[in-house]
Length: 359
Image (cartoon, rainbow, N blue to C red; front, side):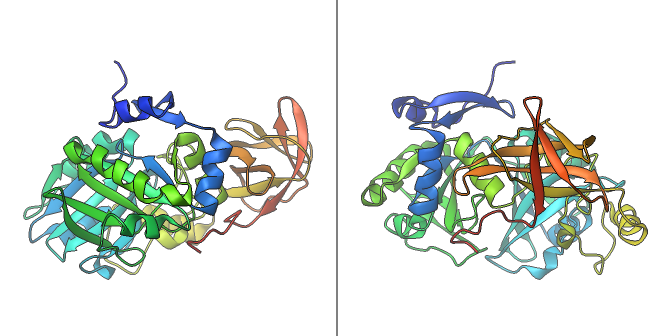
């Protein structure tokens, strides 16, 4: 099956993008270069096409009850215009997806933004577990999404859109007489916005952001920079750092699970993990010598394999190799990561690797 393309595919071609397949989509991996794009976001602003992400709307009087049933986090804690990060879990506690839930009108209308590779699976899971009084609509093919990120991102966006929300909030408005949603969220560790607009409006909106950020040196950015930025910020990537074989507890994000709310799918399994202890856990590593850790590389403890790198890269900001990977719970070093058949010493560290303007 050929890869899908976003409505900005021609725009990417015109701006010199190199493409890669990701989650069934043909997406830009870089334009001017990963490091240049990474540094633009850390120092000023960059713009990303994230139209491959999915948008699922939940409407009706039972919307909140439905989302409480599916989500590990407590959706009742957000009111109109607020956002919350959550996981969808299997009955066994594995992660089906990590999502953002935006409250458009409590308790009757919510927008759920899901990952590209899991949007169909998520919709099927939501439909399978639907309740009377909650209507679920997968509108992923009707909307496109761009992210403007960096210390100058909000100033850039405010030259185009006037109702910039506070952090972790969402606002609605119109652009060229069509509706949009603007979310003060991101995946880079920097401040910024993510804007969801109809497919027919996304190119004009992207051009408007590019023009507005021109004097800041805004750059179009691809998936390469998006990955190095999110890893420095300590954000997990679904399919690498978590999946249906790993739980939020093992992935080091127990705060996304609220045991004090009513029953939700996966609650009992996750509670058993919390009370009984973990067999493995996700750790963050920083190389102390030259080397670039990559997904799939071996993690060594005392010279013996003890885990596999789930995400790894060279950090343009820290100028060293950084990685995440699962190892047996409670294990202590010395650690190394086998980079191209050579063990490179590594030390464990706390996330995030780097705190940007968002922190």
